[in-house]
Image (cartoon, rainbow, N blue to C red; front, side):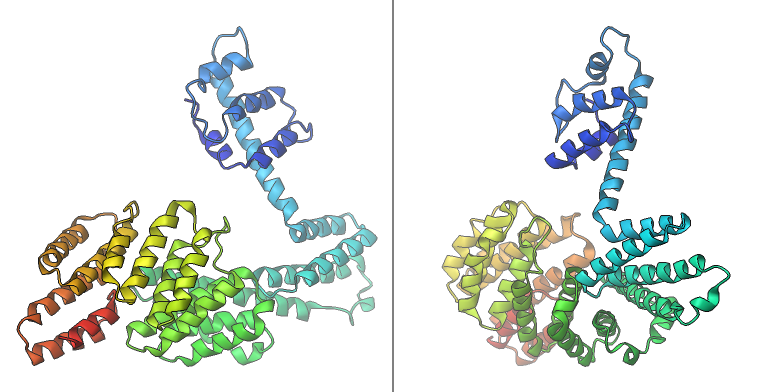
Length: 478
């Protein structure tokens, strides 16, 4: 089989891109080797999988050089050229798509060639593009800084030895302001991403570099820059999580400035706000359950949940259902489950639909119906299996199937201990669920108030626990 970096790269090409790349290869400006174009025509017939018994080096060589003895080095050279051109095509395509970058690069070339009129025309066009975007973001400040910088630099270059003409028009102060805005947004995104990475492994980031730089920021100086304040409060939410004022300040910014934020920043703000609400809920602050639900509704309204293929993430779908049920919005949840089912990727659609319906029926105390829905789920995804198993255990408890419940808990313990595909940190909330439910079962038939109070206390203070609310209900009802 002819498999290499070239075929792996070409697998990512869409049908449109395979046609565009053909035109790219046929341009003598980019490619002067006909054999390279011929190689492409031979192998592209096997796109997109490139898995065919006929796709061998020998067969390709015979089609390229009929009657000649096979020479591996000749084929390797042509493959190298074609791979190189494929990468150039992608770079060229991205460059042309980024109109602002195109104009910035052109401005620099026109400055060097002393083409002042063309420079001014091109720069005006670049500012028009930026003005039409009119969305505060890292990229916006980056290109605003570069354009103002190029304009100011061009004034000096084109007025060499006549600086008195431009001294009152010098714009270096604004260049610095735009650069500072870009730098601060970039810095805070970097800080936040690093913090999140550590949080994934349940570790707190300790970095003097980030902390000292962040402490220098006086947010009062940036009242008119929503995106900067947004990232500032997102970091504050992480570093001073007990102070909910930063969450509400961020919420206010989002409410007033959604139209001035790009989709990437808006998604980040919703995700971080949701994570903050979840953290406060795990600490026992149930008031944030409603906050989380309203956040999800905003995401649905703004369509920030859409993935690259315009589908809804199955995790988002599940979390919305859980959140709605937590605040007793049962009718809204049932409508959501059915309305948004078609937006799920086909690969996950049925499993998550049945699982979410089972959650709904469980919440409505239709335990037999919920159990039937659980049985329809195909366990082809590890986390779906985890969540379904815990729901199945809850159902067995509610239905009073004690023998089956004990067997299911033991099976669940073995599943968690032996499964190497689940990171240990992700097992903790499920292990805690298993531990506390076992304790509830152990005191269920021998009423002991002190034991009951101790279990209830330990559940309430445990921050890393799945189905915490349900466990508290069960221990209280003993």
